[in-house]
Image (tube, rainbow over all chains, first blue to last red; front, side, top):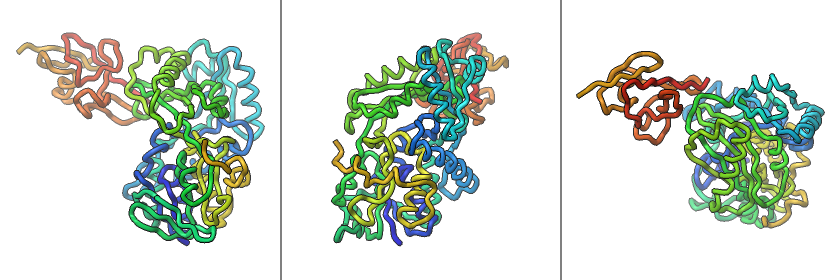
Length: 386
Length: 82
């Protein structure tokens, strides 16, 4: 069976790897290359801490387990051209300022109910874990399972392994879907036609456009996120530390600018400071407002950042689904068309489990969890992106 | 040409007046002077862009060794990220 995967970001690479390992002939097509867009403009989060109990939280728990297994497997046996994933189980600490402590503690209790490890830190334990945190912080909850990869390297690692096992990567833009009697037959690209039995749409915030090429619909929209990068410094941030209001920003559907502080250090010594969410289409205009707001809030969490020099900033477009659940599985209309998109800020973290669900949908391999909540045929996604 | 003296983690080093801190470190046999997650960092771009060569100078962090002219008595320290 020949399968075309459109998009070589982390989700496309994970789908290509899962499908190749399940025995399919896989051709990945991307207009820029591996991790050329969303997957290289993010932080590489693998979080269980930021999701309220529900379908996506259960997927995050499974994906956390799957990433540990996948990163260990990939990094233990690197083929030529395959970088290390830089998987780091750094753990997350969610903090609340006075007034927000009760809500955070209740949230953590609800997460423990579905099996997430969430340990409330007393004041002394919090200072020991993050000594440079503002003394104003009232409560911290430690999530030891929160982890991270270097996202573009992780996507390259998955793609290199898939290619080693026989998958092909072609740099070309898909210009049309080939559909006969409501069944996919292949794609037209800028480098010619490719015939296939199935097509998997993994183009993140452009997934609605890709669905339209096949005469279908998928309501996935771009949501912009910006990040600040400091100059390298001795390590003062030891976990992924974020303000409890992040959970509200993730779950919100508001188009207007929302910011919530996320601070963490990298292997190279820089500190990454996020995060913002705003629906501005694919615009790169008006970045100063979110960057200024992020910087201001971050210094409230870590006062030492006031005297820190910034090296650069970057932004990317996350694939936003109106109901905040990724779209994974068969298209509602066109046989042989599948989608794996709409993960918003969780695409890196959910990638391996997304790959497994796609292999289940396309090839009938066992599903790692109930695929029903994520099916792209659900009514909320049957529209043209607004 | 006159000589300047600096210390690097307490070790006394000498260089020529007008030389950068990075130049003095290299001339005295040091190839790296920062640790980031176990890997050794030093001069990468050498022109002030990459920020890989930063050191602490007289208590001020994040000073680019390739750009900062050495002054008599500068106390230079290695920066570490475990």
